Image 1: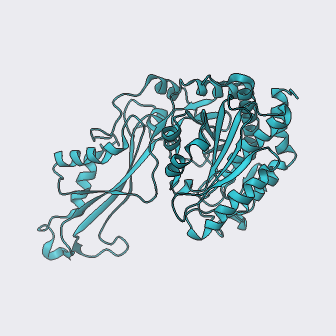
Image 2: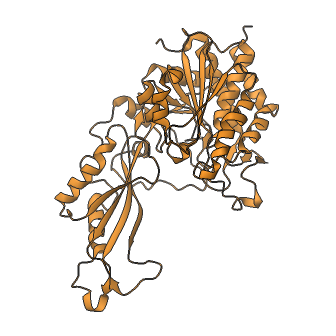
Image 3: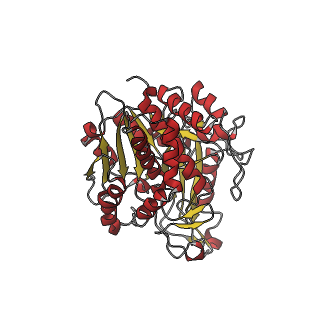
Length: 466
């Protein structure tokens, strides 16, 4: 059976039109895979051993469960189809875990564990983050197999269940099962894209580093009438230290936090990014951050720092007293051009130089944070995937050098040594991580066609040489 590229795309989108995709999505969303909750561990296993294998039944994949090296953490489903060892191998990524369902907080009493259709909006926890997205990849593989009679390449579908808590155990699992996971390229589906009207690929992620700044002057607060103006005030001291980190316009002052140089290929890709104004989302403040940079450069090619919390005393019940302690939590997002391990030492040196040597800098780890990663936009695999998407959509995709948020790109790039490419099929207004998470149905249908085109082209010999 030879088939055609157009036939594969039509077959993939036919799975949407005929309701097959929706039926499979319902079966996946129905499993409450909240990875933040220890009592959901059986559901994480059920997703990987029953729900997903049920969807992939009859596709010719060998399915196995990879247990997490970290006790109490969710497993990985690995589905493998090796057609010829000499052919290119694609590792297809998704994550089956979701954030808390927040039942009772959804509009009109919607059930987070069911897919509710309201026009073009499909509500349900995981419809975009991430069950609906890795299902796109799987159904597109199904369509190509049906049209061509084979894939024309080797595929390994890797679905983990811990991404929403920082993928604990993922690196150790990949080191343990390196031979099982060997591939030529990583292609994952996750996250929102910048516009609803053009396709997109992302090539990594910024890293995140969080820490507390703490001023500890004394064990107790003391009467403000007797001691105000006499005892040093930790709140003001911390405020001055914070003001030394950024200018009043948000420009970063800490040496070592900013890229010394941004590669030309990254700048070229960043300057070509197209944004879409989504109703209900804020507009960028043009005068905040590094002057002279565009919005895209600030988000995707530069460092940012934000304050997550700042406290002294008891804001809910202020007392007339000079406080003994003040604390602030900050988070830095950085690209691969700034080593994550250099962030806190650079801040320590900055504070010492500014006269704040007595302020403590305490690293925090509320969840496992991902490191920075970026595939070069000039990589041949990037060109191949972007070219395929342009052929299917009749317009070139946005090429995002790295996501502004976090994902496990660095782990796959470092452990497998392969290009990492993401194909997002959601949009900025999807409410992921909150009540009323939803997919925009036309993007799901479009994504099925885009992925079928990519799979077809890889199998047709468009993959770069090893």
